[in-house]
Amino acid sequence: MPPNQTPPPHSSVHETWLFDLQSRELFTVSARIQLTAIESLLIKTLIFNEARICSKQELILGIDKDADNYRGLEMCLSRLQSKFKNAFGERLFRSVRNRGYCLVQEVKSAY
Image 1 (tube, rainbow, N blue to C red):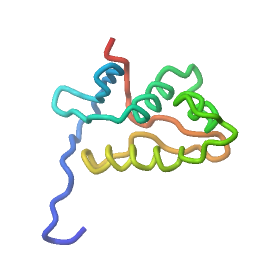
Image 2 (tube, rainbow, N blue to C red):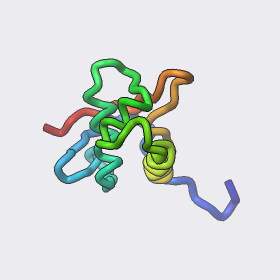
Image 3 (cartoon, rainbow, N blue to C red):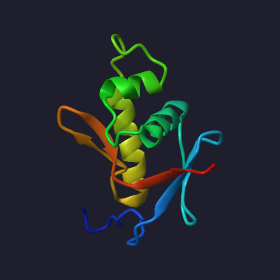
């Protein structure tokens, strides 16, 4: 990191994130991230999936796209990851080789 640039703010204490689908927000007591409609659907799919890992096909279906023809998943995931990482210096999820994606932060539904 360049010497004149400050690191992004984040807590050193592991926090549980709450997700509100209606307001499309991911938040804690001290922080809030506004999400796009697709980002909200991605997080919804990740937290409500009974298996810990969501396949690419499950995520694409979760955002109401055609799993055989949709090519924008990686870009949507990258933007969501960047938004979270820029704000808090940590990853929200990680890829699991040959299986899909899983959350690395604790995220629960707000309702």
